[in-house]
Amino acid sequence: MVDAAVNSGVPYSMDYRIVRLDSTVRYIHDEGEVFLDEHGKAIWMFGTTQDITERKQMEEGLRQMQKLEGLGSLAGGIAHDFNNILGIILAYITSTKRFKDDTKNLDLAVNTIVKAVERGKTLVQQILTFARKRKQYLERLM
Image (cartoon, rainbow, N blue to C red; front, top):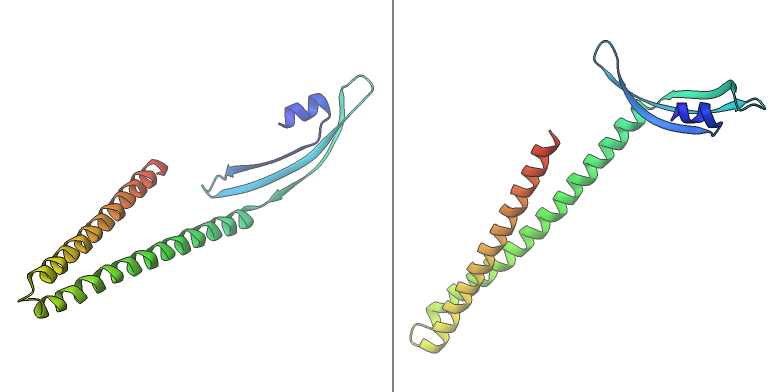
C-alpha cells in the first residue's frame, strides 16, 4: 500500500501487526501521504505511525463479551424451553392419577407427555448440533 502511495501520491492508511524480537505481538496503524514533484517522482513523505495494540485488545475483549452475552441469552432461552416442557410433563403425569378409570383422558395425557418428551429430545439434538458446529468452527480457527 505504501508502494502504491509512493508511486501515485495517493494518501494511505493501513493497520498491520508486527512480531517483536521478544515474540510479543503489536498492532500498528500507519497513515500518510507522499508528495510528488512535477515529474511524478516522490520527493518527500509525511505521515504518522501509531501503536494501536491496546485498542485492538479492547476490541477483542468486547467481541468476547458480546459472544458470552449471546451464549447467555441462548442458555436462558433453552432453560425456558426446557422448563415449559418439564411443566407439561409434570402436569400430565399428575393428571394420570385422576384418569386411571378414564381411558380416553388417560390416553390424551400419555400422548401429551410423549409429545413433550419428543420436543425435549429435539431441543437436545439441536443443542448438540449447535455445539458440534461451534466446536468444528473453533477447531478451524486454531
